[in-house]
Image (tube, rainbow, N blue to C red; front, top):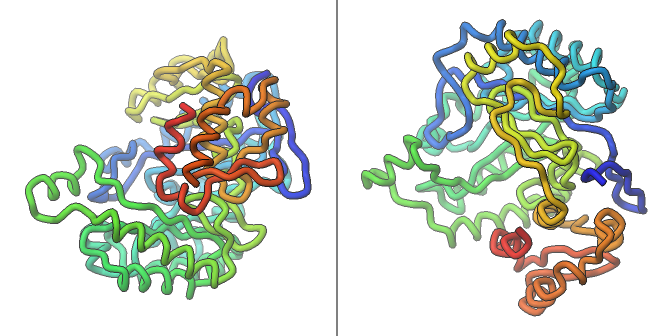
Length: 401
Protein backbone atom coordinates (compact mmCIF):
# COMPACT_ATOMS: atom_id res chain seq x y z
CA UNK A 1 0.00 0.00 0.00
CA UNK A 2 1.33 3.45 -0.82
CA UNK A 3 2.30 5.18 2.40
CA UNK A 4 -0.52 6.97 4.24
CA UNK A 5 -3.33 6.14 1.83
CA UNK A 6 -5.60 5.56 4.81
CA UNK A 7 -7.21 7.43 7.66
CA UNK A 8 -6.50 6.67 11.31
CA UNK A 9 -9.13 7.51 13.92
CA UNK A 10 -8.87 7.21 17.67
CA UNK A 11 -9.65 9.30 20.72
CA UNK A 12 -6.82 11.76 20.15
CA UNK A 13 -5.34 11.67 16.67
CA UNK A 14 -6.73 11.69 13.15
CA UNK A 15 -4.49 11.36 10.10
CA UNK A 16 -6.20 12.65 6.93
CA UNK A 17 -5.89 10.61 3.77
CA UNK A 18 -5.82 13.73 1.59
CA UNK A 19 -2.81 15.66 0.30
CA UNK A 20 -0.88 18.63 1.56
CA UNK A 21 0.62 21.02 -1.02
CA UNK A 22 3.90 22.85 -0.45
CA UNK A 23 4.40 25.75 -2.90
CA UNK A 24 7.91 27.17 -2.98
CA UNK A 25 8.44 30.88 -3.70
CA UNK A 26 12.21 31.42 -4.16
CA UNK A 27 12.38 35.23 -4.19
CA UNK A 28 13.99 37.29 -1.41
CA UNK A 29 14.80 40.97 -1.03
CA UNK A 30 18.06 40.04 0.72
CA UNK A 31 19.82 36.91 1.91
CA UNK A 32 20.17 36.21 5.63
CA UNK A 33 23.62 35.28 6.93
CA UNK A 34 22.55 31.79 8.04
CA UNK A 35 20.36 30.86 5.05
CA UNK A 36 21.13 27.96 2.71
CA UNK A 37 17.59 27.64 1.34
CA UNK A 38 16.85 27.78 -2.37
CA UNK A 39 16.36 31.55 -2.56
CA UNK A 40 17.37 34.29 -4.99
CA UNK A 41 17.70 38.06 -4.57
CA UNK A 42 18.39 39.11 -8.16
CA UNK A 43 15.62 37.56 -10.27
CA UNK A 44 12.59 39.48 -9.03
CA UNK A 45 11.59 40.28 -12.59
CA UNK A 46 10.63 36.60 -12.98
CA UNK A 47 7.78 36.70 -10.46
CA UNK A 48 5.00 36.88 -13.04
CA UNK A 49 6.48 34.13 -15.21
CA UNK A 50 7.17 32.06 -12.11
CA UNK A 51 3.55 32.28 -10.96
CA UNK A 52 2.48 31.16 -14.43
CA UNK A 53 4.91 28.22 -14.33
CA UNK A 54 3.78 27.22 -10.86
CA UNK A 55 0.18 27.13 -12.09
CA UNK A 56 1.32 25.01 -15.04
CA UNK A 57 3.01 22.56 -12.66
CA UNK A 58 -0.13 22.37 -10.52
CA UNK A 59 -2.19 21.50 -13.60
CA UNK A 60 0.39 19.03 -14.84
CA UNK A 61 0.73 17.12 -11.58
CA UNK A 62 -3.02 17.10 -10.96
CA UNK A 63 -3.62 15.56 -14.36
CA UNK A 64 -7.15 14.30 -14.85
CA UNK A 65 -7.75 13.24 -11.23
CA UNK A 66 -9.11 15.79 -8.78
CA UNK A 67 -7.41 14.50 -5.64
CA UNK A 68 -8.47 15.76 -2.20
CA UNK A 69 -6.19 18.23 -0.40
CA UNK A 70 -6.46 19.70 3.09
CA UNK A 71 -3.47 22.07 3.50
CA UNK A 72 -1.45 24.49 1.38
CA UNK A 73 1.78 26.11 2.51
CA UNK A 74 3.48 28.97 0.64
CA UNK A 75 7.12 28.73 1.75
CA UNK A 76 10.31 30.32 0.64
CA UNK A 77 12.07 32.49 0.15
CA UNK A 78 9.64 35.26 0.90
CA UNK A 79 6.16 34.44 -0.44
CA UNK A 80 4.90 37.84 0.69
CA UNK A 81 6.99 39.40 -2.10
CA UNK A 82 4.52 37.95 -4.59
CA UNK A 83 1.58 40.21 -5.41
CA UNK A 84 -1.80 39.38 -3.92
CA UNK A 85 -2.99 38.79 -7.49
CA UNK A 86 -0.29 36.13 -7.99
CA UNK A 87 -1.33 34.41 -4.77
CA UNK A 88 -4.99 34.50 -5.79
CA UNK A 89 -4.26 33.06 -9.25
CA UNK A 90 -2.20 30.22 -7.78
CA UNK A 91 -4.90 29.36 -5.24
CA UNK A 92 -7.61 29.49 -7.91
CA UNK A 93 -5.57 27.02 -9.95
CA UNK A 94 -5.28 24.68 -6.96
CA UNK A 95 -9.04 24.83 -6.38
CA UNK A 96 -9.70 24.08 -10.05
CA UNK A 97 -7.53 20.96 -10.08
CA UNK A 98 -7.72 19.58 -6.52
CA UNK A 99 -10.67 18.93 -4.25
CA UNK A 100 -9.59 21.47 -1.65
CA UNK A 101 -11.39 21.04 1.66
CA UNK A 102 -13.62 23.93 2.72
CA UNK A 103 -11.73 24.02 6.01
CA UNK A 104 -8.29 23.78 4.40
CA UNK A 105 -5.43 25.39 6.30
CA UNK A 106 -3.68 27.77 3.88
CA UNK A 107 -0.47 29.24 5.28
CA UNK A 108 1.81 31.90 3.86
CA UNK A 109 5.25 32.76 5.21
CA UNK A 110 5.87 36.49 5.43
CA UNK A 111 8.73 38.75 6.40
CA UNK A 112 7.35 41.44 8.71
CA UNK A 113 8.70 44.37 6.68
CA UNK A 114 7.05 43.20 3.44
CA UNK A 115 3.37 43.52 4.41
CA UNK A 116 0.74 46.15 5.10
CA UNK A 117 -2.95 45.94 5.98
CA UNK A 118 -4.14 46.23 2.38
CA UNK A 119 -1.85 43.42 1.21
CA UNK A 120 -2.79 41.13 4.10
CA UNK A 121 -6.50 41.78 3.53
CA UNK A 122 -6.05 40.93 -0.16
CA UNK A 123 -4.28 37.61 0.42
CA UNK A 124 -6.83 36.74 3.09
CA UNK A 125 -9.58 37.42 0.56
CA UNK A 126 -7.73 35.10 -1.85
CA UNK A 127 -7.95 32.29 0.71
CA UNK A 128 -4.85 32.50 2.92
CA UNK A 129 -6.03 31.94 6.51
CA UNK A 130 -2.78 31.44 8.43
CA UNK A 131 0.42 33.49 8.50
CA UNK A 132 3.94 32.55 9.58
CA UNK A 133 6.14 35.51 10.46
CA UNK A 134 9.92 35.11 10.46
CA UNK A 135 10.77 37.14 13.56
CA UNK A 136 13.86 35.10 14.64
CA UNK A 137 14.72 37.36 17.61
CA UNK A 138 13.52 40.35 19.61
CA UNK A 139 17.12 41.48 20.21
CA UNK A 140 18.52 43.96 17.69
CA UNK A 141 22.14 42.72 17.91
CA UNK A 142 21.01 39.15 17.20
CA UNK A 143 18.91 40.25 14.24
CA UNK A 144 21.94 42.08 12.85
CA UNK A 145 24.18 39.01 13.25
CA UNK A 146 21.54 36.88 11.49
CA UNK A 147 21.43 39.37 8.62
CA UNK A 148 17.78 40.25 9.20
CA UNK A 149 16.76 43.73 8.02
CA UNK A 150 13.70 44.16 10.22
CA UNK A 151 13.37 45.21 13.83
CA UNK A 152 11.15 43.45 16.33
CA UNK A 153 8.97 46.57 16.29
CA UNK A 154 8.12 45.68 12.69
CA UNK A 155 7.05 42.21 13.87
CA UNK A 156 4.71 43.81 16.38
CA UNK A 157 3.26 46.04 13.65
CA UNK A 158 2.89 43.10 11.25
CA UNK A 159 0.94 41.10 13.82
CA UNK A 160 -1.29 44.09 14.55
CA UNK A 161 -1.93 44.56 10.83
CA UNK A 162 -2.67 40.85 10.42
CA UNK A 163 -5.38 41.13 13.07
CA UNK A 164 -6.76 44.25 11.42
CA UNK A 165 -6.92 42.32 8.14
CA UNK A 166 -8.96 39.59 9.83
CA UNK A 167 -6.35 36.91 10.55
CA UNK A 168 -6.79 34.94 13.75
CA UNK A 169 -4.19 32.21 13.21
CA UNK A 170 -0.48 32.87 12.96
CA UNK A 171 2.94 31.48 13.82
CA UNK A 172 6.14 33.20 14.86
CA UNK A 173 9.59 31.72 14.15
CA UNK A 174 12.42 32.26 16.64
CA UNK A 175 16.03 31.04 16.59
CA UNK A 176 18.12 30.00 19.59
CA UNK A 177 21.74 28.88 19.83
CA UNK A 178 22.82 32.14 18.18
CA UNK A 179 26.45 33.22 18.73
CA UNK A 180 26.50 35.77 21.55
CA UNK A 181 22.94 34.97 22.59
CA UNK A 182 22.50 34.51 26.35
CA UNK A 183 19.86 32.80 28.40
CA UNK A 184 18.55 36.25 29.35
CA UNK A 185 18.36 37.51 25.75
CA UNK A 186 16.60 34.30 24.69
CA UNK A 187 14.09 34.82 27.48
CA UNK A 188 13.59 38.36 26.17
CA UNK A 189 12.67 36.99 22.72
CA UNK A 190 10.30 34.39 24.17
CA UNK A 191 8.61 36.97 26.38
CA UNK A 192 8.21 39.36 23.46
CA UNK A 193 6.69 36.67 21.25
CA UNK A 194 4.27 35.53 23.96
CA UNK A 195 3.20 39.14 24.51
CA UNK A 196 1.86 39.09 20.93
CA UNK A 197 -0.58 36.29 21.92
CA UNK A 198 0.58 34.17 19.02
CA UNK A 199 -1.22 30.90 18.40
CA UNK A 200 1.89 28.95 17.42
CA UNK A 201 5.65 29.18 17.94
CA UNK A 202 8.37 27.42 15.95
CA UNK A 203 11.74 27.48 17.73
CA UNK A 204 14.78 26.39 15.74
CA UNK A 205 18.33 25.82 16.95
CA UNK A 206 20.73 27.66 14.65
CA UNK A 207 22.73 25.43 12.34
CA UNK A 208 25.90 26.89 10.82
CA UNK A 209 25.47 25.76 7.22
CA UNK A 210 28.45 25.41 4.85
CA UNK A 211 28.88 28.22 2.36
CA UNK A 212 26.82 30.78 4.27
CA UNK A 213 28.17 34.18 5.37
CA UNK A 214 27.72 33.07 8.98
CA UNK A 215 29.88 30.00 8.39
CA UNK A 216 32.61 32.18 6.85
CA UNK A 217 32.50 34.48 9.89
CA UNK A 218 33.00 31.48 12.17
CA UNK A 219 35.84 30.09 10.01
CA UNK A 220 37.58 33.48 9.97
CA UNK A 221 37.30 33.76 13.74
CA UNK A 222 35.05 36.82 13.74
CA UNK A 223 32.42 35.04 15.84
CA UNK A 224 32.53 31.98 18.07
CA UNK A 225 30.60 28.79 17.50
CA UNK A 226 27.40 28.55 19.55
CA UNK A 227 27.67 26.72 22.88
CA UNK A 228 25.61 23.48 22.64
CA UNK A 229 25.18 23.30 26.42
CA UNK A 230 23.76 26.82 26.45
CA UNK A 231 21.46 25.91 23.55
CA UNK A 232 20.15 22.96 25.60
CA UNK A 233 19.50 25.32 28.53
CA UNK A 234 17.67 27.68 26.18
CA UNK A 235 15.50 24.83 24.93
CA UNK A 236 14.61 23.84 28.49
CA UNK A 237 13.77 27.46 29.33
CA UNK A 238 11.46 27.59 26.30
CA UNK A 239 9.70 24.38 27.35
CA UNK A 240 9.07 25.76 30.83
CA UNK A 241 7.93 29.22 29.70
CA UNK A 242 5.65 27.99 26.94
CA UNK A 243 4.09 25.31 29.14
CA UNK A 244 3.31 28.00 31.71
CA UNK A 245 1.74 30.07 28.92
CA UNK A 246 -0.60 27.18 28.06
CA UNK A 247 1.10 26.13 24.82
CA UNK A 248 1.31 22.44 23.96
CA UNK A 249 4.70 21.05 22.94
CA UNK A 250 3.41 18.82 20.16
CA UNK A 251 6.56 18.45 18.05
CA UNK A 252 10.25 18.78 18.90
CA UNK A 253 10.49 22.34 17.51
CA UNK A 254 6.83 23.41 17.62
CA UNK A 255 4.42 24.64 20.27
CA UNK A 256 0.77 25.64 19.84
CA UNK A 257 -2.26 26.70 21.77
CA UNK A 258 -4.82 23.88 22.05
CA UNK A 259 -6.33 23.21 18.62
CA UNK A 260 -3.78 25.40 16.79
CA UNK A 261 -1.13 22.86 15.78
CA UNK A 262 -0.08 23.29 12.15
CA UNK A 263 -2.04 20.77 10.08
CA UNK A 264 0.46 21.13 7.26
CA UNK A 265 3.45 20.36 9.47
CA UNK A 266 1.58 17.39 10.92
CA UNK A 267 1.47 15.91 7.43
CA UNK A 268 5.28 15.89 7.42
CA UNK A 269 5.63 14.39 10.89
CA UNK A 270 3.00 11.73 10.21
CA UNK A 271 4.96 10.82 7.08
CA UNK A 272 1.91 11.69 5.01
CA UNK A 273 1.69 12.53 1.35
CA UNK A 274 2.52 16.03 0.16
CA UNK A 275 3.24 17.55 -3.21
CA UNK A 276 6.30 19.78 -3.47
CA UNK A 277 5.72 22.32 -6.24
CA UNK A 278 8.01 25.15 -7.29
CA UNK A 279 11.75 25.52 -7.83
CA UNK A 280 13.74 23.41 -5.37
CA UNK A 281 10.65 21.96 -3.66
CA UNK A 282 10.66 18.44 -2.23
CA UNK A 283 7.65 16.12 -2.25
CA UNK A 284 6.51 12.73 -1.01
CA UNK A 285 3.56 10.99 -2.68
CA UNK A 286 2.58 7.75 -4.39
CA UNK A 287 5.64 5.95 -3.08
CA UNK A 288 8.14 8.55 -4.35
CA UNK A 289 10.34 11.13 -2.72
CA UNK A 290 11.41 13.70 -5.28
CA UNK A 291 12.87 17.16 -5.73
CA UNK A 292 12.23 19.84 -8.32
CA UNK A 293 14.97 21.61 -10.28
CA UNK A 294 16.37 24.52 -8.25
CA UNK A 295 17.05 27.33 -10.74
CA UNK A 296 13.93 29.50 -11.32
CA UNK A 297 14.74 30.17 -14.98
CA UNK A 298 15.23 26.45 -15.68
CA UNK A 299 12.06 25.67 -13.73
CA UNK A 300 10.03 28.16 -15.79
CA UNK A 301 11.45 26.87 -19.07
CA UNK A 302 10.70 23.23 -18.26
CA UNK A 303 7.08 23.95 -17.38
CA UNK A 304 6.43 26.34 -20.25
CA UNK A 305 7.96 24.04 -22.89
CA UNK A 306 6.20 20.83 -21.83
CA UNK A 307 2.66 20.74 -20.47
CA UNK A 308 2.18 16.97 -20.72
CA UNK A 309 0.66 15.08 -17.82
CA UNK A 310 3.51 13.14 -16.16
CA UNK A 311 3.73 9.43 -16.81
CA UNK A 312 4.29 8.76 -13.11
CA UNK A 313 2.27 10.86 -10.68
CA UNK A 314 3.44 13.14 -9.05
CA UNK A 315 6.62 13.66 -11.12
CA UNK A 316 6.28 16.81 -13.23
CA UNK A 317 8.57 17.76 -16.11
CA UNK A 318 10.39 20.05 -13.65
CA UNK A 319 11.45 17.18 -11.36
CA UNK A 320 15.24 16.83 -11.17
CA UNK A 321 15.44 13.56 -9.24
CA UNK A 322 13.31 10.97 -7.50
CA UNK A 323 13.57 7.85 -5.35
CA UNK A 324 11.00 5.10 -5.32
CA UNK A 325 10.62 4.12 -1.68
CA UNK A 326 10.89 0.54 -0.53
CA UNK A 327 8.83 -0.77 2.41
CA UNK A 328 12.01 -0.59 4.50
CA UNK A 329 12.44 3.08 3.55
CA UNK A 330 8.84 3.83 4.47
CA UNK A 331 9.06 2.05 7.81
CA UNK A 332 12.23 3.92 8.74
CA UNK A 333 10.80 7.28 7.73
CA UNK A 334 7.59 6.58 9.65
CA UNK A 335 9.68 6.02 12.78
CA UNK A 336 11.92 9.04 12.24
CA UNK A 337 9.11 11.47 11.57
CA UNK A 338 6.55 10.03 13.99
CA UNK A 339 8.89 10.14 16.98
CA UNK A 340 9.21 13.90 16.48
CA UNK A 341 5.59 14.16 17.60
CA UNK A 342 6.04 14.26 21.35
CA UNK A 343 2.44 13.54 22.36
CA UNK A 344 1.42 11.38 19.42
CA UNK A 345 4.55 9.34 18.79
CA UNK A 346 4.28 6.15 16.73
CA UNK A 347 1.21 3.94 17.20
CA UNK A 348 2.14 0.26 17.41
CA UNK A 349 -1.25 -0.78 16.02
CA UNK A 350 -1.15 1.68 13.11
CA UNK A 351 2.39 0.61 12.21
CA UNK A 352 1.36 -3.06 12.09
CA UNK A 353 -1.78 -2.27 10.08
CA UNK A 354 0.15 -0.22 7.53
CA UNK A 355 3.15 -2.48 7.00
CA UNK A 356 1.84 -5.92 7.96
CA UNK A 357 4.68 -6.33 10.48
CA UNK A 358 4.86 -5.34 14.13
CA UNK A 359 7.26 -2.79 15.58
CA UNK A 360 8.71 -5.56 17.72
CA UNK A 361 9.36 -7.71 14.67
CA UNK A 362 11.10 -4.95 12.71
CA UNK A 363 12.84 -2.86 15.37
CA UNK A 364 12.60 -4.91 18.56
CA UNK A 365 16.29 -4.88 19.46
CA UNK A 366 16.71 -1.15 18.78
CA UNK A 367 13.59 -0.23 20.72
CA UNK A 368 14.66 -2.42 23.66
CA UNK A 369 18.09 -0.77 23.86
CA UNK A 370 16.75 2.77 23.49
CA UNK A 371 14.12 2.06 26.14
CA UNK A 372 16.75 0.63 28.50
CA UNK A 373 18.81 3.80 28.03
CA UNK A 374 15.80 5.94 28.92
CA UNK A 375 15.42 7.51 25.46
CA UNK A 376 12.13 5.86 24.40
CA UNK A 377 9.03 4.81 26.31
CA UNK A 378 5.91 2.92 25.26
CA UNK A 379 2.58 3.76 26.84
CA UNK A 380 -1.02 3.29 25.70
CA UNK A 381 0.15 1.57 22.53
CA UNK A 382 2.36 4.48 21.45
CA UNK A 383 6.12 4.73 21.31
CA UNK A 384 7.44 8.17 22.25
CA UNK A 385 10.67 10.00 22.95
CA UNK A 386 11.33 10.61 26.62
CA UNK A 387 12.39 14.03 27.92
CA UNK A 388 15.95 12.76 27.86
CA UNK A 389 15.52 11.33 24.37
CA UNK A 390 14.50 14.71 22.94
CA UNK A 391 18.01 16.06 23.52
CA UNK A 392 19.64 13.23 21.56
CA UNK A 393 16.79 12.71 19.11
CA UNK A 394 19.03 12.64 16.02
CA UNK A 395 20.97 9.71 17.47
CA UNK A 396 17.66 7.95 18.20
CA UNK A 397 16.42 8.53 14.64
CA UNK A 398 19.62 7.12 13.16
CA UNK A 399 18.73 3.72 14.62
CA UNK A 400 15.72 3.51 12.29
CA UNK A 401 17.09 4.80 8.97
